[in-house]
Image (cartoon, rainbow, N blue to C red; front, side, top):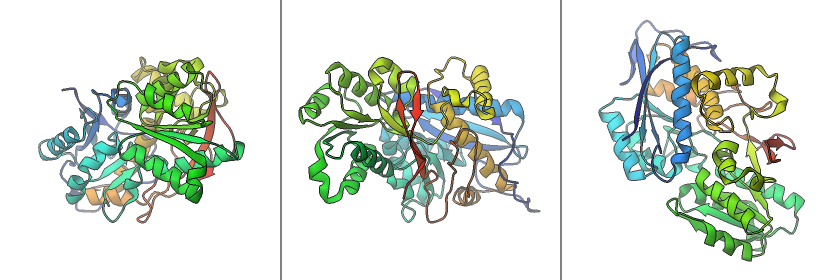
Length: 402
């Protein structure tokens, strides 16, 4: 069973000053004078293993921090384990991380379904699930899951943004949607139908679902093409996106095609499909693309490239994972630092739910991270971008979401 157990020391320029340390230190399990132990589950094996680059990038980020110093003198003991993107296994691994490893909280664990499988267990114990690698609306259900928080634009909001743009360029659009048959895909479909409202039957002419274990999506895509749709939404992880981009091109279908932000990276999704087959696909972004010439003199991108050179030299620079890791890793540093010696689970959750106009490296201009006790969505802005055969080119304004 793949397992990464990394001790790292965190340091850096903090985004806010640490809260004054109290005379009496206060620690939750997993925290001490010398360390903070953090848990994570990732699909290092199984049908979603292409997304394991997120865990690898997080590990590299903490290794970099380790080489630089520390946050308030404490090391980060980062335990990232394989759940195979299988919810029962996620629960098994999560229980082990809590009951045997004594992690303080969870950070950037992958997937809507896997995280939903452990949300009750963690919330019952008041253990934070911070910046889950998912944009499901579940992570803003504060009454039922007060210790769970996502890390990207909600899937429902993204669906509305995509559909609004599609109708602006194709007023008589015929839309088709291919979605993963789980909370991730269904959340997107719900958002699409909410946006279209009583005109859903007019615009949404076909839908099809798939299981994450499906070896091919060919039959679904051929069926959707036969509907006459000229707009196509595909929602799921990188493997499904790659298969969809390839098949759409190979059968000569030419819809206006939208990909989810979480699975649109050049390295993880488009290159495996064939770069030439992805020309014209549209997605949304809230982070800088290091390959964009616009950022060639940007200090944040220079620092990111230095990080990649040293810690992830073999990872495709088109992967989005290390960009996400850089942004959220810096937010996490702020949270840990601001708790000072009151390093408890409740303090961590309190800081995570009081982020105001936070700017961290690699956010697009005009984008900031904001949370409150009544709104756990940290990202509420997105900019559309289109793949030109080499890179994504942003267009239009940064769009705020409700």
